[in-house]
Image (cartoon, rainbow, N blue to C red; front, side):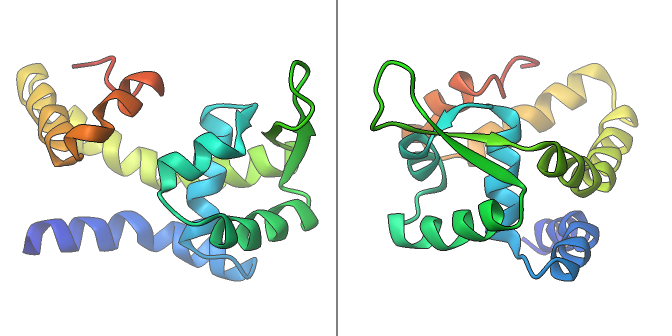
Length: 145
């Protein structure tokens, strides 16, 4: 657990500093991540993935919308549906947030053999609750396993 703690601390550190300068926190980062990963994601799907209340998401989402990072559109087929899209500002900010994290992951994975890298990915999937593993597939997060 100690190794996981230090890895997580260092993985989140740079992004946390950037988020703090904007008055944001990790919840904002999570929303930006998934909205950038799946443009047009319905709010209901985001709630399901993040496992947070509507009230918690509403506060974070409102800040991201008010600050011009995310926009909300109505669905074409169902006008009640709220679909989330990152704005150009949101895509650029997310890229900055992800830069150090991606390079940290890439450097660690690149130092491994292909089989060891696969084992790391399997380990991470194994850390996810079995009831959520289909979400990983839907988000195309298990393609390299």
